[in-house]
Length: 184
Image 1 (tube, rainbow, N blue to C red):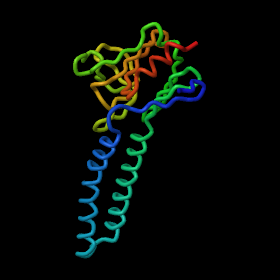
Image 2: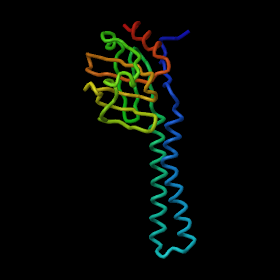
Image 3: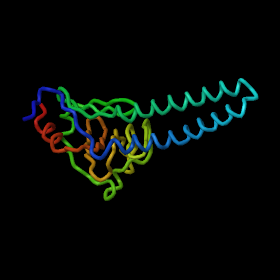
Image 4: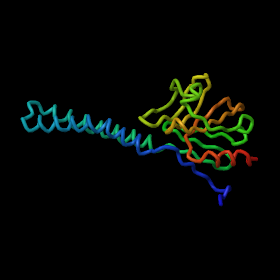
């Protein structure tokens, strides 16, 4: 039984491991190559002590970049609290009262068969392999907040009051539909 008085967190559809592991692979391979080149250069004897400092700074910067990107990818959340839908993308958050979605409703779409709803241009967003989150313009020129980890099972919400659409890859969109239907 669901307690509607407590915040409800939604699980994203698709795997969140895939984007994180791909991103680690994308960043870790060049970092490993750079570290290997630095070790080889250090063993052959540094000709300039400044080179060692530069190599350490570059390696540390790549590690920090990897950590920051992983943190962004893991901070994506969708929840309902106090009759408001709260979507935390990797670069911000948006809160919309559930009542605002009643007029246009909620539907589950496949972006491969309905390409007019696919995100086309980033406004304020982060895209990693397997995860797109943030503000986008859709192909139909709507402005949308997106959290997409699976393009075949996407919950489309529209609020005419806020002139805003949302595309969310939710594992259980039926629960969100029920919450919108009972919102006061």
